[in-house]
Length: 65
Image 1 (cartoon, rainbow, N blue to C red):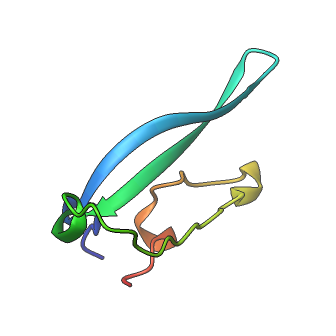
Image 2: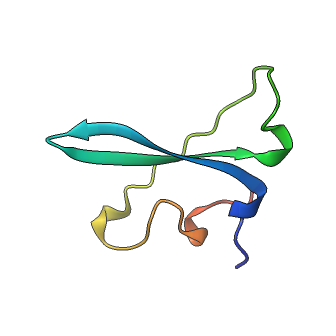
């Protein structure tokens, strides 16, 4: 599967810190709307992963839409 990430502007942020452990998140904004100033819908995808495998940006966890 080809990576979908080149289509997005990407920011890595710390969502929360608990007991000196940082919980990170990745914010992906389509390059086609990255400079848009008007309000747009937001899709939030939480992937717990069960601490077994993968990362939050694993290609098979990202939808084509």
